[in-house]
View 1 (cartoon, rainbow, N blue to C red):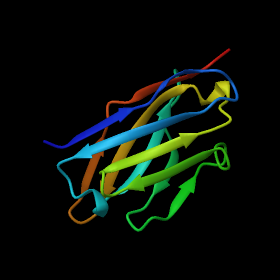
View 2: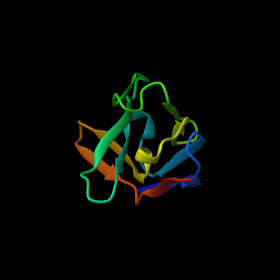
View 3: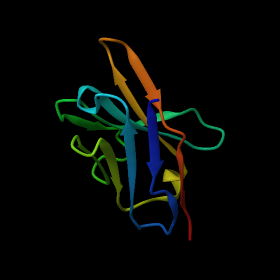
View 4: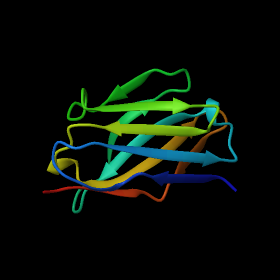
Length: 117
């Protein structure tokens, strides 16, 4: 059974940091492009960061320079290091993995991040 298990969320003050982890089971992790999405209350789910199977990464403008996505293929894990957190970063953060051939698309259950003083 494929499993995507996020962890690392919590309550943090503005300006603080958190590191999210997503441990993946029962897929060829290295073949997947990996993504972090987030969804704030009342908003649509939005892409935050991506890291391709080859290692190239990209970010939405609002987090570039503050967030860093990385992957450890040996540990089947993707990370999201979040620094200089702002209240508007408050959301449930989801891990997503996709590949094209064969087509696969998996989601984790999400981890809550709350940025508040």
